[in-house]
Image (cartoon, rainbow, N blue to C red):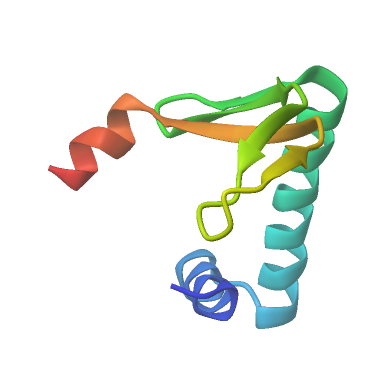
Length: 90
């Protein structure tokens, strides 16, 4: 499903215009990003939990050349499915 498909679904389900649905989806996504930046964790109870994790710098190996490559430190996001999402998939 693409973002546009999701906007169309939200508009239809909530009785909104596509413009309003787009703004609602963008606000939701921006809220998730803001929560991760400020608190490091966003929980949507029953659906999923987004968690920011810091990965330290490390040395990796290029499998093609065998050369060592330095991978810089970075933040990554992990997503853990909640019980309602897990149940919906099975």
